[in-house]
Amino acid sequence: LLLIVGGIETTRTSTSHGMRLLMEHPEQYQVLVDNPDLVPDAVEEILRFNPAFIHMRRTAMEDVELGGMQIKKGDKVVLMYDSANHDESVFGDDSEVFDVTRAQRQPDLRSDHRTFGIGQHFCLGSHLARKEMYIVFEEIVKRIRNPQFVGKPHFAQSNFISGIHTMNISFDMAS
Image 1 (cartoon, rainbow, N blue to C red):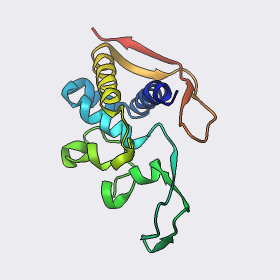
Image 2: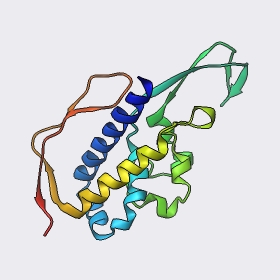
Image 3: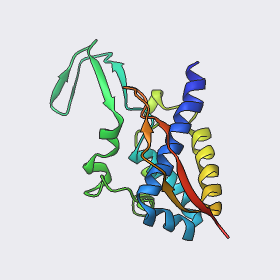
Image 4: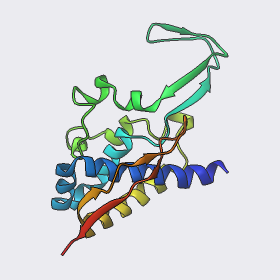
């Protein structure tokens, strides 16, 4: 069940948020229309900017000090993905800006964001998710022009996955 949720729901969520972000930033969408070879960079920025998971909880296996805080063995620790992926010390002063060209100036973006976790908790399906998103956005950029919202998106009610329940759009077909 975890592999199904991890392989379907999270990729669907990331793809939906990617389209939402591109419609909210039409100049970024135009960058991809003009430079479709930037789609892989754009996917990394989508993953960084709006990860599918809101948080992940772990249990400390040993006493440790982290950032001046004492964490004791058995303590529950929560990673807030948005917070980690918008850390100014990693992503710069513009960490709150959605920029599909970020990887051009931050070549390690793919490994700097924590959307897929890190270490032994790194997502098993990260390569498949990225490939699916590359293909989806390569095809969207080829075919769709002027994507716009038809009404407001309706977000799923969850404290675990940042999903979009419905998002109606209109668009023109590329000529």
